[in-house]
Each structure stands twice: as structure tokens, then as C-alpha cells.
Length: 168
Image 1: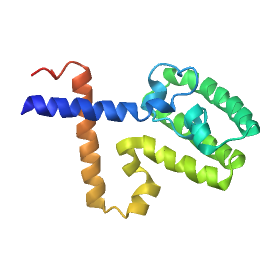
Image 2: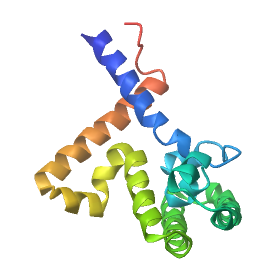
Image 3: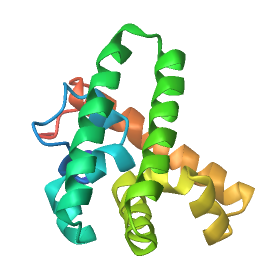
């Protein structure tokens, strides 16, 4: 039974880790910090697959290239901040990216990028206010999802820190 659980956990972890992986900016970004943040619109816009999906024109691509370079530069100093400061700065950068997207993208492209953000968020999508509202999640459902998410994060940490052996 434990062997099956660990195998399933490994697959779940791989799926969760793979979903935001395609959102890496050209060049791969710095370390794992950007992936842990889930990406957001700023990183997604820099992804060639997302640009193709959004059917961006050359002018939009150039503006996005400049913007994502500035975003990556702004993220460089985040490692030196404590967790709360880093979270606040990332929220600020994400809000700036959302504003940028509204300026540069058409309404249809904006709608699609919002969908992609949700798709790449994995379980975190259920914690997004707009998603929870649209799904009409109850407080009880939100709490169950949070518990599942916390449990999964704990299990994934244990798995990757050698706390579990998939060979059992």
C-alpha cells in the first residue's frame, strides 16, 4: 500500500512541477525561485508557446521581450529579502504584469492569458479569489482544498528531501 501511495505521490509531484515548467522565460530564469512563484502573467508572456497560443504580432512580442527582461531584472534582488518581503514584492510585480498585459494585449488575448494562468496554477488555482468565486466554493470546500494542498506540499517536500522511498 505504501509503495502505491509513494508512486502516486511521485506522479502527482511530477505533474504539479511540470505544469509551470513550460512557463519558464526564455533562458530558463534564475534557479527555482521563479517556478516556486508559479509564474504569473509576466513569465507566461515571455514563453514562446504562450505567445503562439495568443497569436501575438511582432510589435507585441517586442514589447513583451522588453517587459520580461525588466521583470527578471527586478526579481534578481528578491533572494536577499525575507519571505514576507519577497511575497509582497512578487505580488507587486504580478500586479504590474497584469496592468502591462491589459495595455499590450487585446481583450481576447487577455481573456486567454487569464485562462492559461489558471491552468498553470495547479491546486493554487482554487485559492485564487476569482476562481473560488466562479466555482462558488463554500468555506468548507476551500478548507478541504487547503488541507489537501498543504498535505501534498508536505509529502512532496518529504519525498524530495529523502523522507520517502519510492522503492518501498
